[in-house]
Image (cartoon, rainbow, N blue to C red; front, side):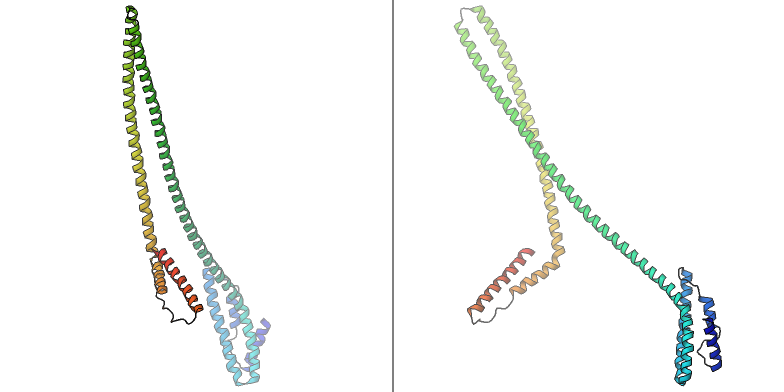
Length: 320
């Protein structure tokens, strides 16, 4: 390349052809620009400026070539050859610089693209996590409500079992009282039949007295048990009423939440509802055809009209 540059310089001097590139310019470019890289901010700026200077010189050579060639053809061929050699020399210096800059530009573009893709991935991950969190909260709320309902049913079953046990105990106490009354009647008959046996009668009377005391004690104990049963029944009923009120309150809250969600969804869907309503109104406003001449055409019209009315009715039902 150095030999070609020397020959080109000599030819330029001999033919007095001026392409706008003074002697030594190419060597200056080679000295200043060969080996530059764009992998640092300072190097990138140096490469950019070098490319601008090389491009300007190269395009100047081309412009001078065209101008000189237009004046004389033979000299033009010489100018073409010299310009080609000069241009090739400049390109040999320019191309590595351009490739170095292009490598950095492409790397920067890839880096920006990777950053954007990472941001988008983060956004999508956050949206997915939010949907999963809302679904988990709803599932937990449903499970909690179901557990509370099961507990309320279990409490009601226990209370029913307790009331049944107390009714059995009451029936057994009544049976014991009836047995006691029968025993008293039997004792009275025995006393009347054994009137002559006074001592024995006294003993039987004493026994009857003691039994009466025991019966009174039992009756008092039964009354106490009955009072306790009634108090327990009242407490159970109060607890049942409280649980029922709590369940009612929870159901009302759930219904209120459901209605609020319906209002929100209707507000959110209002633009679509408006468009669907316009569409349904447009269907119902379609003009009827003029009098049809054949039964076949009339039948087709009636079937199609019934279908359109059904579509409009379906839309009206859906947007209520």
